[in-house]
Amino acid sequence: MPSHAIARVSELPPGERKIVEIDGRSIGVFNVEGRFYALRNTCPHQGAPLCLGALGGTAAPSRPGEYIWEREGEILSCPWHGWEFDITTGRSIFNPHRTRVRSYEVTVHPDEEPDPGVDSFPVSVQDGVVLLHV
Amino acid sequence: MTTTASPRETPADALSEPPARRGIIDTDVHPNPRSADEIRPYLPPQWRKGFVAPRRPFFHNPIHANRLDSTPPDGGPAASDPAFLREQLMDTYGVSHPILVPRTFCNIHPNPDYGSAIAAAYNEWLAETWLGTYNYDGAFKGSITINHHDPLRAAEEIERWAGHPHMVQVVTDSGARAPLGQRQYYPIYEACERHGLPFAIHPGSDGIGLNIMPTPGVPTHYIEYHCGMALAFQAHLLSYLTEGVFERFPTLRVAMLEGGVAWVAPLMWRLDAYWRALRRDTPWITKPPSEYLRDHVRLSTQPLERPAKDAHLLSLFDAMDAEHILMFSSDYPHWDFDSPTRAFPKMPEKLRNAIMTDNASALYGL
Image 1 (cartoon, rainbow over the protein chains, first blue to last red):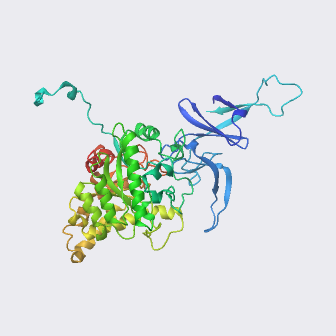
Image 2 (image 1 turned 90 degrees about the horizontal axis):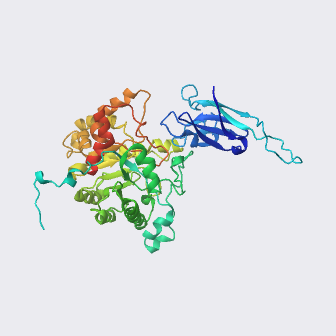
Image 3 (image 1 turned 135 degrees about the horizontal axis):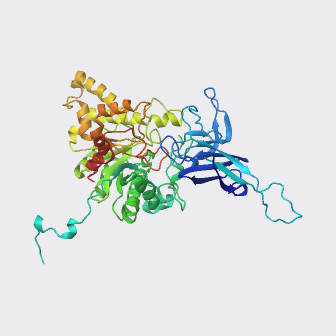
């Protein structure tokens, strides 16, 4: 599966997202607290640009009158009709088996050639490259 | 110099004129002012200071009220930038005419003068901006907003705008104190009929301020309230069809916007059946009530019900005579936008054209 370098880690800090076009497909790549995820940027419902939606939590199934907020930062809801998708799998919350959006693997490739730095200030984390596997 | 032209001598430039655009007519589009300050100057001085951007005090949408991608690139509220609306709605989908329905919430206020002043201010604003400076090609068509709590003042407001080249209907909220077929509203329908303007109803202020809920009591949740908006439309439709509104006003047309459509046929089956038995209760109804509906009422499609099987919806379309009564609407920029390309099942071309263009074209004379 070909991989595409889409950003430096420093260009996609936690909480940020980047929409990229790969072979005519629009894909959203997200950094959720240091973990990277990618979903197809098309909602299966009416074709909205899904990856422009809000990333937040959701209310877990509960007893009537009870609200249990969970999975903060892991639920992407469509910018049009609000359909909720698990950012880690692309599966919808209301029907995970039938309604889903394509998800892609994202890895971080260590940077082989760090910038020629100042010796007395070594960096603890190298600025790797975010690879999207499509 | 005077010239006379027979058909044979039609000037060449007239022949080369392109035919009128036959794009989609979107019958429910909501333009917004950039802020309350854009409306304020159109209000009489006594109302200017206190005016705030209209909003429902409760039943706030738990996800978002507008499409998140509808915020204009240069900022401001959704649907406040005409260039971006043209791009996102008209260019993307081939919409030739958005019918603009401002959300004013003018009907919620206890003071009828204030409510009518807000309606009048929005009409001035709409005429100057979206139907004026933004409307270089005449694509935008607008609605005369009225406060139905003051029918006489509402009729005056209709008189004030009738004849405006881009005002194509009168609009008010489905939220009301009484079913809209009752006689206190007749000055409004007289004015509509006098000027050939359809009367449109749109949800949003049901149960707010002066308006009662169409439910027994107040629903608890947004989902319950929002889904139940169709109930007000059913009540208003029954009122129109039993009060004899279309016998009193034989050329009046009513456009029911955003009130749902899948319920229409079963309600008409029920009403026609009761009419056969109870005809003497409303003897001015001289034919099955569903026939008045077909002749006088049009409904916008969004938010279109989508059962699991398309055949079920198409069967309901057939039962309600969708080919003659439905008009496409997207509700742009609201969150429950219906895409012209994705909201509908596959339909025969004639039915599709009727819904997307022809029925609205006939109603609004476009």
